[in-house]
View (cartoon, helix red, strand yellow):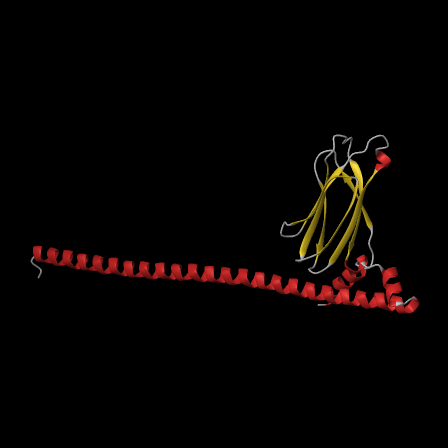
Length: 222
């Protein structure tokens, strides 16, 4: 539980910041980035091509964002800049893929992706103006939201842990039932083999007795 708490705290603190990710999209092929996000979380991202490496050409990219179940959340083609925003409907890995879709591909391009998740998507300046708060009160509000995010992460991690335990228990139960079935079949086969062996022994004994009786009669011993 202590490990889960520490992980939840780290996730909650990380959600307070948003850093840009630089992606090198190759001339051919796709460059993807994924993020594991729980359900009912706001996601906001901006992306743009960096033209420093292409001063004389203007390649474009295609972008596709999918949910853990494969649903398309954002699709854009022939783009140089763009934005996508959505609220997650299910927990899991959300995938954003980029590829070149123009004739001017060159040696590939660099894409700047600014991916914000959860409380990092909040516009604190707008909130401060709307609610007329500032200074320490604003910082306390940020901490309150961060604590809520940590609490939600704890619930999410606990649910994942319970799900993992249930899967392990189910696998163990299935294996136990399979082993029990195999054991019962083996015991049944051993029992039938024992009965067959006993029957063979009785039959051989009767044949030996019948043979001895015939032998003794021939010898006129009985």
